[in-house]
Image 1 (spheres, chains in turn cyan, purple, yellow):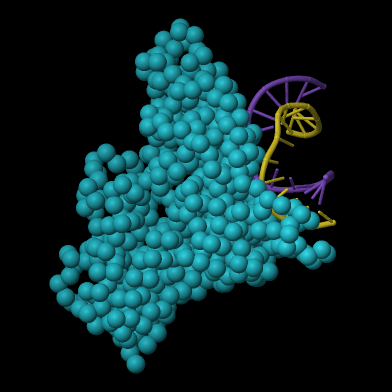
Image 2 (image 1 turned 90 degrees about the vertical axis):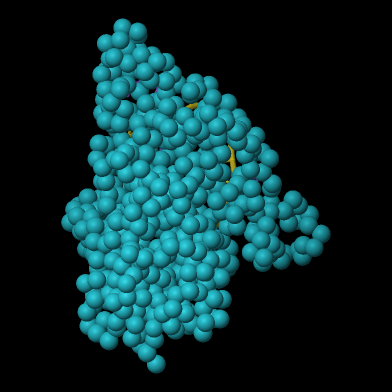
Length: 526
DNA sequence: AGAGCGTTGTATGC
DNA sequence: GCATACAACGCTCT
């Protein structure tokens, strides 16, 4: 039977390595490629102008590629459940295809849509292609438990074998018997959105450094994969957080939106590695993709992964509430030039280096301001082009030493850390031109400059540029103490030692469930 | 129980 | 540039 198929793009905004799209083309006479602007996801609160612009670019590119196949993209505005119900009837859809998405909201949304599909007799086909592996399989492989260390994840993925090879984009031949009815007068109705549509002011928008879309992603991938020796010697901790142009690939936004398949990235790297000596996980580029897999897996296995409360693996910390601190951090006016420069780059460009994220995240949370990582998470989600639900939540937990990482006494200095890779403070001068006349000696701590130096630099601290919001040496010490106390309050493993346990059979190995294990078991059942 | 390890700390000494 | 002290965490394996 020939289907009328609706392929629903959500993430996975690409034609290459898109198994659900290929499944859509099978036994298909009419194809409707659809993207839904979901007010829950695509709204002014979660999605800053830069990210919105990236999405628009990606949709334009997708539409262009589909048109080359005599098809097009239909952009639909509204709640997915309601909109699909309408479209199933209007277009007499018999099959729905999409890429599997593990985010809690997506899972509940897709469950609702599956019910609507069933009502309309629409067959549903979905494929895993956003991650290297089916992360549910990784958890299964670990006896149903979430791997909480990278080492463990590495062992599990090793035992699963290499990720699947990517599949090619559909060709004109694949589309031979497939038609997308474009004649209807729906050019306007289903058009690509504009920035104005979401109410963003386009006049104030900075230059677009990282345009969205699969074509740009593949171009960028090619550009970096040509640098074979750079790829082979890549070690993440050795790359600079404050170089004037990115020291890493900036492929993350493309992977986030699925313009680039993680598996395509993985196998292109494997090609470059082939026969050469190369760096290894966790620091290698393959290692970076495995970090992504690590946090995706944790986000699926850990309930309430984007929150502290109700999150069984997250240390419960008595974070302060201080909206002025949050605002100063977000708006790049902490008085620490390194921190403020990073936050300025983030606001302008939508991307900052991973170690720069470490510096500002540590500063906001356990290092200096003692603000909940959830506050930082919100700001990053809004500003980052590569804002990804799982990675954002996972990394904020890491940096705040709430989960995964526990050496809370290792605190980044907002003064010393940046100096390692940028002694002159050129990065600071680029993003905070106000400070560009300060001599290198004072660029990381302008409040220490004598008044004469400040006058000569044309920038008075406390008037033109803020005084430091906190005394780092003082608060960081105190915060280590608060962290120590928070750790001391952590619930311990099932109180009694095995030998004292009443139902312990001597000699038999009894599994000691941690409180976290038990909480997770309980919550997964629901 | 204890050792070894953990992608990416800082300050100080040589 | 490299080693070391700092004061010290949880997880994993033995």
